[in-house]
Every structure is written in structure tokens, then in C-alpha cells.
Length: 72
Image (cartoon, one colour):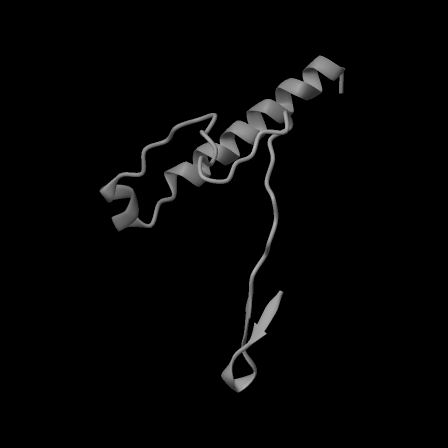
């Protein structure tokens, strides 16, 4: 749903019911991360996104592991 704003702008609002694969609602409770990576003040000051970097590393690790298991 998009609401028109002045000067040709608009505000888009997504309306969805988010469920886990088990059918549990996420509204009001959110998700718990699989990996917890602290974001330090030093990271913020230096422009380093340690959470994104760790997530990328984990995707690469899991993808490589899956490829080995599948013989690719």
C-alpha cells in the first residue's frame, strides 16, 4: 500500500503476517539470531560492519560444507 506524499514522494507500507516454518507467528517476538556478533563502538567508528562480515563468512562456510556433502 502506498500513500502519496508531496513533491511526487510516497510512503510504502508492507502488510504481512510473518510465520516460522512451523507456523509460529513472529509478531511481537521477532527472531533469535543463529550467530551473535557484537557490534563494538570501535567497529562503528572505523566503519567496519563486523556483523555483516561474520554473516558473509558463515554463508561461505555453510555453502562450501554443503558442496562437499553433495560431492560438488
